[in-house]
Length: 72
Image (cartoon, rainbow, N blue to C red; front, side, top):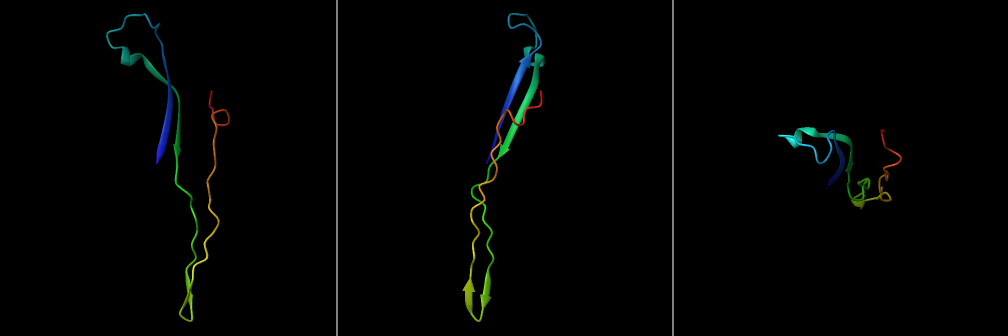
């Protein structure tokens, strides 16, 4: 799953006239986040016919906030 957030700005005043207002849009910054649910490591083994399936603790990833990763 991925999420994105974009902040746009316009070079002309809001009440200005332009035949193609979509051409006035500029991207100020974009943030993207990819999310995967709970990653774990599995180490499967079979010793003398007995299965062993050790499972690691969940890896919840890392959280990012806007102030930490802003490029103004």
